[in-house]
Amino acid sequence: MSAHASFSARLLAWYDRHGRRDLPWQHARTPYRVWVAEIMLQQTQVAAVVPYFQRFLRRFPDLAALAAAPADDVLQAWAGLGYYARARNLQRAAQIAVAEHGGALPAELPALLELPGIGRSTAAAVLAQAHGQRHAILDGNVKRVLARYGAVDGWPGAPAVARALWSLSESLLPQERLADYTQAIMDLGATLCTARKPQCARCPVQDGCAAHRAGRTADFPAARPRRQRPLRQAQLLLVQDAAGRLLLERRPPAGIWGGLWCLPLAQADEDAAAFLRGAYGLHAQAGEALPTIAHAFTHFDLHLRPLRLHVREPAGLAEQAPARWIDLAADALPGLPAPVARLLQQLAGKAGAAPPQGMAPATTRPRRKAVSSPST
Image (cartoon, rainbow, N blue to C red; front, side, top):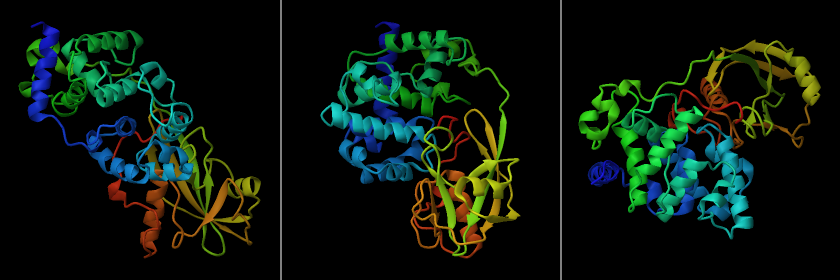
């Protein structure tokens, strides 16, 4: 048996004994369910994804339901997972599939890659797991496994390193059981070949692993070259009218928290009252400043300084887009960025009120260092 055949055979034997075979998207392993799971699993761990996946599928059980849903409903169901461009692309891809592919995801790699939000590894994972097609994947866990197995030098995000990892991934593919193999290699990276303290003694492919043989597992994969993370600052405006309602605005499609509803954001050095007059014709008086909220994005850090403001006169914004007044005690909330939802929940708790309708408890949110990227 060749070294490459031995890799897949040993990995599949290990998967049969120790692999994860009870994940909700494996029963049934339909293209839609696998696809939704793969998109959710980008930048998010399995344990955090499972409850989101189950709620999402109850709300949008198939492509047609997702395609036809209001965008606000999709974003609300996604709120807390971060990287909100994933949710927008998910719905747009569903709409294209309904309009152009007979209500199903394409079963061919080139056509699947044309849908928004679907890259090479995601498309391959869908086709391998849902259709048993022979395609290699290269998600974060698999990059780590292969970088160590082949002692592939360099940061996996560099084009030359990525090409080498893709070549190795394709060379290790078995001829059969592609769905199980795809899950197995992801499981290996998630459970044994972890970033820190890999459990090499339990690894089914340790004999062929170049990094293990050389005692250099800590050297692979190479870390991304360090860059200074910029710090951005903004004001988060808690604008309250005479009836006690808070002002929410819809974020633009591009930029942070695109498409979500949010408390108004003003520049750090901007006069908040002047901003509200210019943006919404509101005359407000600034009140107390609340403690700064530190929030990490993929490529920068954001410090938000919450500031209370009170509108001096009746404000007729009920029907004005892209803003609306919300009664925290009575209204169901739309999809909100996680730090904004947490702030409103904290304020409701201090006031002795029940959490606003539609607001998930803070303990249900997955904890991640990076919640979004500048383009989401």
